[in-house]
Image (cartoon, rainbow, N blue to C red; front, side, top):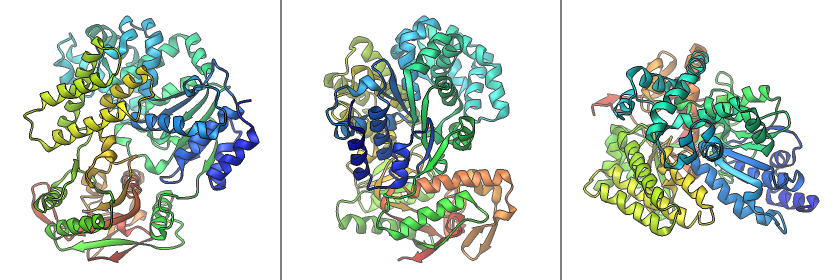
Length: 603
């Protein structure tokens, strides 16, 4: 026996302070378990203890493994690091290597691993997938510019599949299935032969491999006896099809996620996936109940609770107590920018606190706040980029290309290789004065240092995967929590999965947050009740599409608030700046008019 079961249970009970719901999830004997884990409720801690308990009680044999999957490469390797640290403390006399019993990866990393072994059955070039250049197939004009023999129809089909993955519904799913074989043929004939591979096709080739080779599919279904999926709410259609192929009646599956943290609908996260899979796989559901992130802060605990209550029932939320939030309102953006500078200074003077100033998007309002920080010569880190920004995308593409060229020559990830790689990237951008490039070079340096120190124990293959998947996923932004600056400006989407001591949420006005395209353009004050500066949603006027859009924006709001470990401060202006920099009369964000939210005025 790996460990005395009762002894381990007692140790886990102490570690989890007898949190009954966490313990129910850890000790559950269900073969089909869905764990709903809100932000700050101890998800990662529960997941690690669950893995330890499964290893102790299920004891997968040496030729079987537990598969732990996550949506993002950063989250997957954080889990791997935490498991490597925590497992030896939980399981006494650990007499096996963690890699012997566990595979921890993101979806693409897992598929790369399988393609290295069996990809030759689909195309000989897949054996050396690490040497192939991954490209995004969203823009058919860029595909044509590769000059690899693609005609317009083929390029359009590739980008059409990408659009369908990102906008999944009944019709787009049908489109994917109808053109599945053509997609594989085009990638095989035109891209692989020229040392390119599309990001989507990495998953598609594995799904097709399983469909056409039942023995291989059966092998992996048996091989991964237990499958644990983190961040399950962010799963897209291709990732789900991969999962569905790995699951049979004998697997034990654990899905962990939070429907309110599904903020990647715009890149294909399937709506209502947790509930759909609960029914599809006949899963038992456990909801974690205790918020540890805001422990001791009654105000923030109540705010988080009330936002969740609104998300569960917009028309009639179950609110027992009002949450009073710190909200500062100003006549114009200049005054708000000055207050933001003063508030950040005030927090920093109290100690070595880390602050995030989060924005729904890059706009004129947040730029004025940044200008105020520059005028006061306050250091900050600039992280206001998205996965759609050309500079941000191209930086990752160049990093990936240079890295692939280097590992073709030097197979091992050494400190000298990483230094050489960083130097080559710095030379490319030596004349750049752009703030985005400057911040990306900082993040690249931080990331490479983490690879050489924090992830020192990873196998060489895992290091290569970590680096490639970071560039493929445009994921350097996930290193923002390690910057030396006390103040970070970032978008709310980029901040997901990260934490700071304090979060400032400026520009809490209609058309800014919620954004015009996210919800306000559809509403245009027709679906809300307006009184003075206040604007409150009237959910009785909402139709299904209005509700879906509002909930998606509310999820972003929730994610932004839960990036704070101590406190969130809100601010707004009666005059906002539009896209042209013109002052427009504004209204307070309808999020601050939700049931159960009341403001405390601040100066």
